[in-house]
Length: 180
Image (cartoon, rainbow, N blue to C red; front, side, top):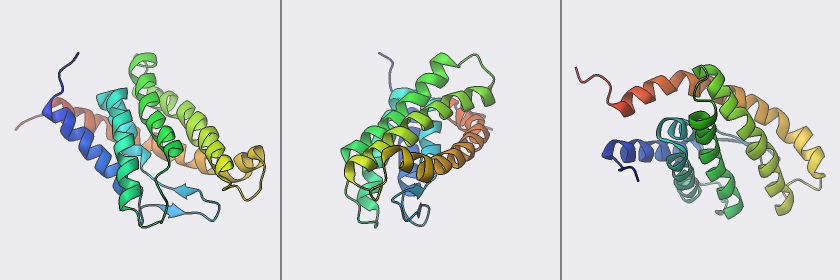
């Protein structure tokens, strides 16, 4: 087992706190159909890419808990959405570090984020909305195609651009960078 460093723990905590902060108002925009525009996945993806899938999953879980408890939205913590959060922290790190590690950074970032957003943000979250009755009576596929697909597509592009731009800086900081 690899030893946990203070630097890893510090960065993971920072990413979790930033993700929790980005998940609450005024950084989150709620839409009438229970969807929301949020940038909380960006620090989670950065944590997962830079520190690994276990740290990414822990970061996502902690940020989900923190975000729920400090939010003034009135939403209760839900383990179904926590599962989605943890998967969004674990899966990109697995893909980035083990499947696409030899690819150029932009391609690896894209190939690590797109399938996770399709599987988790689009399908799984829509399933949770359907099971909880948040779709306004719309069938699963109609809600997915009409209400969720455009949002996930736009946010995926934003996440890829942000993670691609920030990852080299984060990586340098975690590795220690230049102490001059």
